[in-house]
Amino acid sequence: MSNAIICFGEMLWDILPDKELPGGAVMNVAWHLQQLGEKVTLISRVGHDAHGQRLLDMLHVYNLNTGYIQIDDQQETGKVYADMTNPADVHYDIVYPAAWDFIRWEPSLAALLKQAGTRYLVFGSLCSRDTVSRLTLEEALKEDVIKVLDINLRAPHYTRAHVEWLLQHCHILKLNITELELISSWYHPYEDKEWAVRELSTRFNISTIVVTMGGDGALLFMNDIFYVEPGIPVQVVDTIGSGDAFLAGFLHSFVQQRPPRECLIFANKLGARVAAQAGAIAG
Image 1 (tube, rainbow, N blue to C red):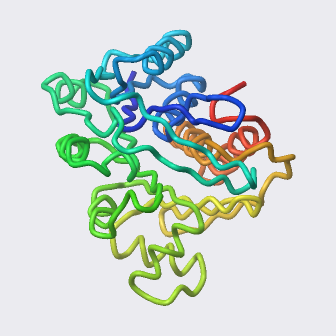
Image 2 (tube, rainbow, N blue to C red):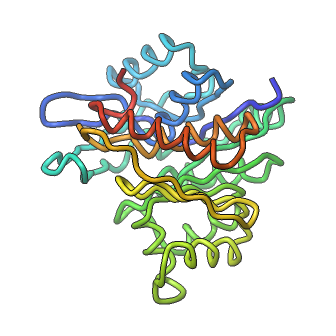
């Protein structure tokens, strides 16, 4: 296949008040891409524990390649405690350290990235909060692939300097409206979303930027043209993973070379569908 996609980053458990659900932004994206028929490989790391085995078992059920998921004998599988006080605005306590903070560079990863047909590398800002995974990501970003960055600014797990470094190394950027406002404020007082997107595009030479805006829909900047789609009314169960589903839907459409507006419409629909259910990848 000429459009193989590699997803690099966190896989973990979202701990809710009444249950545990599989999650992690990058794993969520990989899962949805697999469901959409894309050829996906996930690079991550889990602990040598029951939580890690349950994640691996789940991915096996969905035929998602687990051959590049490392096993850590010291660190536990990642966990995130979700504050569900407001289901439309979930807050997270992301446990540190976790196994996915220690993804190590191996010759097999270099071979994977150079493999014929590999065209896309999806990664986030959260997965490089620790030096070990960060150095591995830096090695991966040296390869000649289309780099897709999913910004995920969760204090205190990022620094401005590192976010800027990541922005310098991506071709496609996805972020939400709050993150757009924050990053834009580093350089100028925030004016409006289209001004901020264009300024980011120019500053970091990013030709494709997608902004999710919750119930207000989404905005796409591609080839110097803006596209805006309104939100899809749904009864929100929780917003866990809806942005990840959105990115998977967008990238699937982009890979299939669909027109920009169709990419945005499809992404919007998938994001809304996940917001209307519990968890990131259920159903």
